[in-house]
Length: 321
Image (cartoon, rainbow, N blue to C red; front, side, top):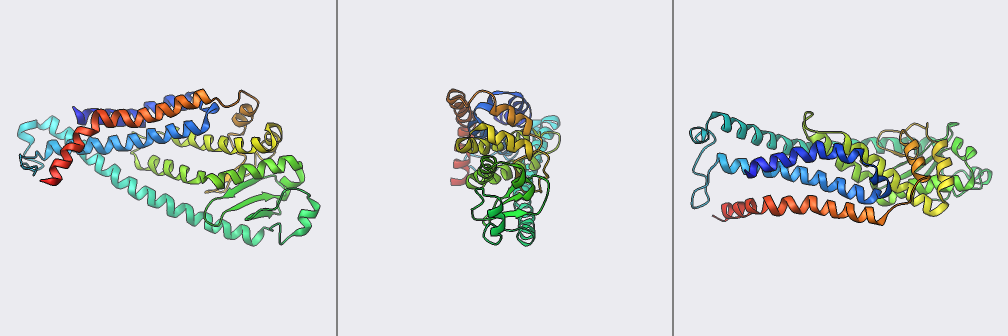
């Protein structure tokens, strides 16, 4: 029953639950708490999947009184029957596959993303100008351009994005500087620097890795899509605290069509309309945030207490035998 419960919880947390949460409107009023809830759901789904595998293994390799296995993988066929044995082996194998895929996915995403950003950083360092190396730009555009890692590209199209990492960069185009007002430039730079300061890229990497680790027939893109929107809202909130909503909204609209390099976090993009509407709507709610934090704790604590503790005790007995 525990194996079945773990499997059901893992399937629910990787499919229907993210689908319902992705359709909800309240995360717009508590983006930070919503991200915590998404993280709790993802972690609980992974832990439930592994717990199902552990529970299955305890049925396939029956421990004796001393805690050591008294059965082999195939010897339990006569006890369980072919149908149930086949289901157990399938779930156990799927758990091992998910574990291996998760490890490989984390490594692949981390390595590929950092290589891509390093290459793009090298390019913008070569073709872009900094506020120190191009003082004529700063005098021509009396705006808040000072800052470590800022690069200005000679591009007519308004665009702004950041490249996170140890040697981070904030990239803006001359088109953006010539189009936006002083307060709008301040808003867009504050937005990008908020991404770098909070390391939102690491949150995205985690969800990207988990998304790639689960099989196609189980996983859903709802979590990854929702978290991408929510981290943009967090950066928007940082900009609003500095300049107010109007300059940021105008800057987002101006940069909405700007391209976003892979691995970068851009101010514009396909979520611009939703974010601008949010800036004109209701403010963030502490009550909604508190409810989301409580739900995140429940998602992690309740399955652990109700299901995981008995199997943790069994593992403790097995390894100490």
